[in-house]
Image 1 (spheres, rainbow over the protein chains, first blue to last red):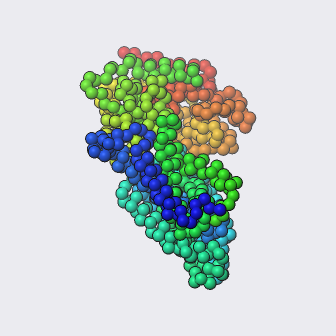
Image 2: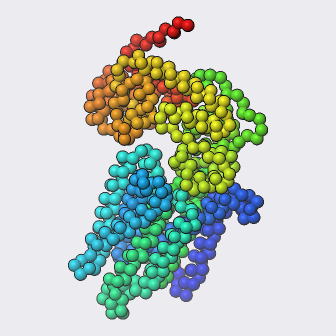
Image 3: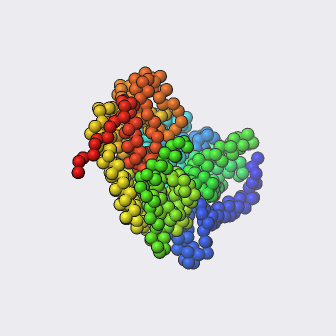
Length: 337
Length: 289
C-alpha cells in the first residue's frame, strides 16, 4: 500500500521540490562558520561573498547533482536486476571508478593535474568497469544475465578494492590518507570550477533524461520480458540503455565526490514506499529526494565542524543515517522493487 | 607523557636560548597555520598571539591548544580558514593548492608554503616562516641555534662507533624510518647506520622477519601509539631487544621538525651511544686559542 495515492502525485512532486529548495537555501545560509548572508549578497562582506559564491554554492549544486545521480541510478539498477540490494556500486562501476581515481592520485603524471585528473580517471575507470561487467555477463545470444552482472560486479569490486589496498600500503602516509578521504566520499574536494560542475550537470541531465524516457519500457519490463515484448518493448535494448545511463550517472558522481554510500539504496526504497513502482514517478522522485537528502547530509557534516574540528566525509554520514533507515524500511515491509 | 612534556619544555626553552623579542609594533598580521610543526615554529618566533587558526593537531606549545581550529592537516575547512580572516596562511604545498589556494589568493591572503622532508629543511622552513611573518631576525636566531646543534651532532658523529640503528615510528603495523626520510636524515647525521636503507619509501612497513634479519644494534622506539615494543621484539627473538637496547624517543620534538629538533636529536644520539656503551662519551677538549 503506497502512502501517496495516485491523485496526490503532483502534490508529492511539489513537496519534493519545496524540500529540495529549502535544503538548498539552508545549505547556502548555514555552514561550518557563521556567514553574513546580506553582506555576502550585497558585496559589503567580501570574504563571506567568497564563501557563499565560490564554496557553498558550487558545493550545494554538486551535492544535489550527486544525490540525484546516485538515487536515480540505484532505482533503475534495482529494477533491471530485480534485486532490492542492488545499489549504484554493485555492478562494478564503484570499483572501477575508485581504482581509476586512486591510480590518478598516486601516478605522478596524473597527480599533477590535481582533482581534474582524478575525476577524469575515476569517470573512465567506472565506465571501463561497467563495459567489462557487461561483456562478461552476456549469454551466447548477447542478452544480459542479471545474476551474472551482480556476481561479476561484486567480484570486480573486490579485486579493485584489493588493488586499492595494495596501493595504499605502498604509498607515503599522507598520500594514503588522501586516498582514504577520497574513498570515503566527500564533497569538500577541489571540484568547484563552473566548468567541472556544468560538465557533471550536463552528464547527469543527459543520463536522467535517458532514464526518464525509458520509464514506460521499464514499467513494461517489470511485468516480465514476454509481456514487455508483447507491448512492443525490446527488453535487451531497454536494459542496455538503462545500464548505460545508470553507469554514466554513477561514474560522474564518483568522479567528483568519491564513494558516497547508501544514497542509492535508501532513497529509491523510500520513494517506492511512498508512491509505488511506476518509474515515470519514481525516477524523478528519486532524483529530487536524493538531491535533497545529500544536500542536507552535506550540510550536517559542515554543521558538525565546531564539535569535531573537522568535516566528516559525507559518505560516512549517509551510511550512518541510511543503514538504520534501510533496516527500518525493510522491517516495515511492503516495499518491493 | 608529563615527563616528556617537561623535557620538551626545557628543550624548547633551551633551544630558543632566550625569549623571543616581542612582535613589532603596528597592526599584527593574522596568521593561520595548517601544520603542527609550523605552529610550534610560529610560537617560537614570538607570533603565537597572532595565530587565529590552527589544525586540531596543533598542540605544542600548550598555548597552541587555545587557537581556534580550522580542520586537520588534509581535511582543512575552507570556510573556517576564511572566517578567521587571515593575512597569512602557513602550510605544506600539498595543502596550499587547488581551490584553497585560489580562494586565499582571491582574498588577498599571503600563502607561505613550507616543506620539511630533510634535516636541512628545518632550517630553511624556519627562515621561510620567519620571512613570511616578518620575523626574520628571530628566525635567524632560531635557525642558528638549530645549526649549532647540528654542528655538535656532526662532531659527536665523527666519534660514534659503528652502530646499526632501526627507528620504529609505527607499531602496528611496524613502520620504520628509512634513509630517505627526514628522521633517516637525522640518524645519518648522528653517524649511525640506518638498518632501513630504502631510498624509495621514506617510511616503509616492515615485517618482524625483516627486523630480525636486519639485526640492528639498537632499536629506536619513536611510535606514538601505546604498546610494549621492546617486549614484542624480544619475544620475536631480536637480540637488541633481549639485551635491552631499545631506546624510547624522549622528546617528541624530534618527530616534529621545529625549534626543539636539534636538541632532541642530540639527546637521541646520546641515548643510542649509551645503549651500546653505557660509559659516557667524553667531549673533546676545546681547541687551544
